[in-house]
Length: 217
Image (cartoon, rainbow, N blue to C red; front, side, top):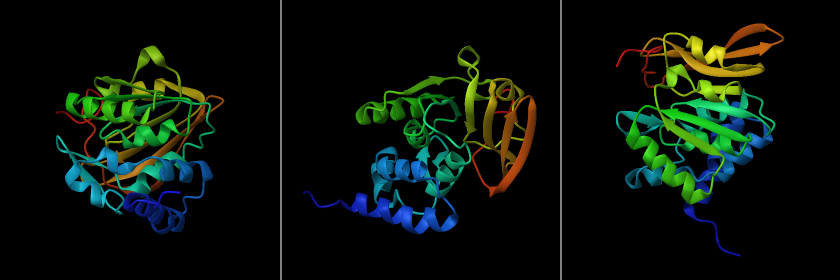
């Protein structure tokens, strides 16, 4: 039996010290966070810090969210494994990779070609074949594949884009940081039998959601 690598040790420490004490209790989310090698989604220079309790730069002015936020946003979707999910903001690809362990299929949209290209290589290396990516304005969603059982937006905007609401299934859940460009509230939209409710989890800080229904470029 091979000895665990430093990455394995740090990943387990991430679970025990960052996630569980903050209320991440969904066993499927914890297992996904334990399984997906986060260090492969950051640049080589940052790999030693990949499991730290903070975001990291990934180039093009974007970041990979801290592990807790990835786990929290995944947990509030209450995934069972059968869902079709839309992710807005592929970024490093890490969050899509985690979601791919929790659902049937992930559709992820990113406006920056360089990020999609890099993420796709990691998906292929890990054989995460249930992730489909495209380059586009994420604020308009992915109409041809709608509706989605869950939608996750990994960038902050002034409001939840109407096209995303329109593409949410019933029942369905959407999670997104909403607010100004310095701080946002993490909001969860629940849609059930035609009734829509919105709740706020906590304050967060994300990069800007750029697009026709977000911030101007």
